Image 1 (cartoon, each protein chain N blue to C red):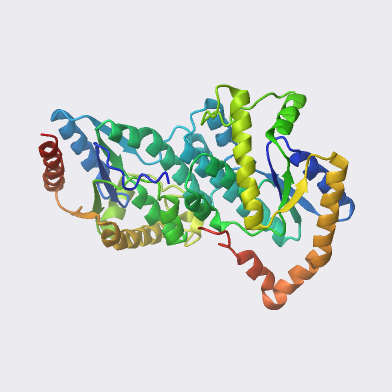
Image 2: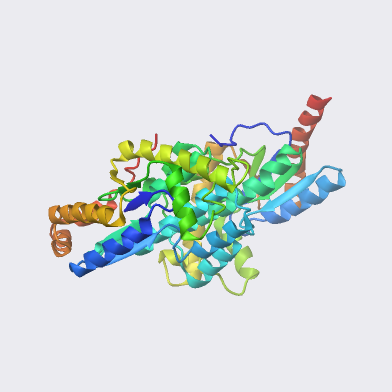
Length: 236
Length: 225
């Protein structure tokens, strides 16, 4: 799974990784935050109105996450897919923490998540670099990505810089805590993609092929056990 | 932490809980009329009433999209919106807030659906502790009769048909309500719920509630004088 700030190139890299994995014969499911069948539309509408309270927002995100976990990711993993996710629980936790929400509470909610095989953290050195990307994308500053709901500055720009600076700090802290693979995302797309491929290839080599895993399940139930391993996200 | 749990707002929060058909909503309406007539600022808030979440819930119920975990989390989202919008602000303003169903409904239903008891309690740890929570207890058969009489057909999630206990809606509903009642019973001590015998006359139940609530309101007045 891939984590990192807004505009850092996560979706670009997921698309590249997916094409590469498929060309090597792996089935891929790609998913991402606020893409669930259940809650995506509701979240979008709520965000448009800018009337979403802090707690309500976190819980809406968690509903979206759980729907994708249970109805997309778990079935895909069971079927031997490689699951690529654009953001996982860490972005949700970081957003909550930046908004002053109790971190034990938010972590307890996400304690139902599966521990991923790897978390690739696309790291950027300063929010200034993100600003450049936002401008060059032509989209302009987004209300929520600028943290305007907590108004960290007089305007979108000031708030964006402060919000993203705080997000970066939280991500850096989690990087050690959860053992992210940190990648310097200030480099060219090509060299970041090459790094990602190398790491993913190593992981896939270490792991048994999906067929064997499924076979293993019928033998001694270990795969089932693995999927049942939950609650490993630290709650304190 | 943004846990409102122990905050002391000037307002009061009274909550009614109980299985479907226990008569709690009727009692809350009577309470509302009385408090209003007495001149108190009263505000009422219902379970499952957030305009932000409504469309998502309706769609999910219609298309049977819920799992026990997402059912739980979406209802928590709905509740958080109520807390942030309709419960905390009036309490701060000194109003009496009457809530038809509160966190105990989620604890009972979600655990009856197989969610982890501690997890559900943690999810809702941002809620305010009510001034008093009334649990309207009716024996299973009485509650079920009341529901069946007033309704042509049980709904899918209401009957717990998502759990696959039985294909017969009535049988499934009975199993589900039985489990819910068990959860409520264990919460009486855990959360200090006030037990109201829901088999007595409506008038008798209302008298008992008014007497209890008067105590809280008196206490408030003598404090401010």
